[in-house]
Length: 403
Ligand SMILES: [Zn+2]
Image 1: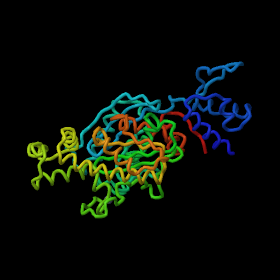
Image 2: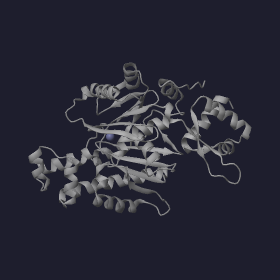
Image 3: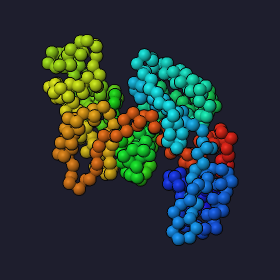
Image 4: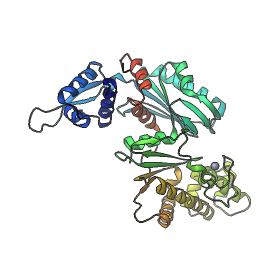
């Protein structure tokens, strides 16, 4: 095996294990102690790794532990664009977050979003001097490798090369990732999917999307469009039109938008609901109003959300049958309702086979799922994406001369 390829493989293992001895590395790669010591010396000379503390002795001299030299990586500036908010993070690749800030997108027009992002980056670079990478997380169809937003219904972008645009402007390496895939990386690094190789994230907000991790890696698909679970037709007799043009898609039956639209139009045609007052006062309903209705046992809110949950259960049943994951993590406001979670479990019990043992549970990370995600994307890309790693390290004066 070429020396540079072997060094990169060893770096990935040191990163994943966080701390490891030469002996353990020699065993993993089936190399002699002399051979592994030579490779480690080369990595120490490049200052990509460090010798740290001593490990536990098993009789002889205690082993020296090797770790990644985090100092050669600059801080991460993350902008996570959810449909209604931007979550801004400044943190380090050791997972420490120094700054968290949430900006509402309510008053920002779609065409101004890119300007707003650029303003947030400029302000952050002026106040934070150690930023070495920017991560942008967006919804829609995303090509992570090429850094392109193929299509984003929320910001009305089409084939926008965000990475090139921002790198040309700010001269800092930029990473782009899809929102639900970034959630998968986050759950894998700090959430309920640590150490789990096969799992699915099921996200409901204005739309519905999933991200699947197979054998430890996020699956992207041939066109980088895997996981569009929201557009499987789940109700063939439905007249409700989906944003994609089809009728009866899961998204058109069960997304926040679908639930809100149904309840709003039912109230407008005269159906009784305690939410009528809120609708008259505010002029619109949001998902928190609906969940309040569910909590107060409003008949219409319970009827519509329960139907939505029945379709979600059908969708989850399809996922379990195709992927056979160990866990499915649910993300979305509706999963914070105990009543709706109980309904979901009841519906799932109708479908699941006794031997399909998959844990289905809501995320426990809350907003941290959005704040940590940009860091998770960077950690995943280090040593995996060679071009990016080189740019990231050399930006701060380090060297990463792998050919
Ligand atoms: Zn659709």
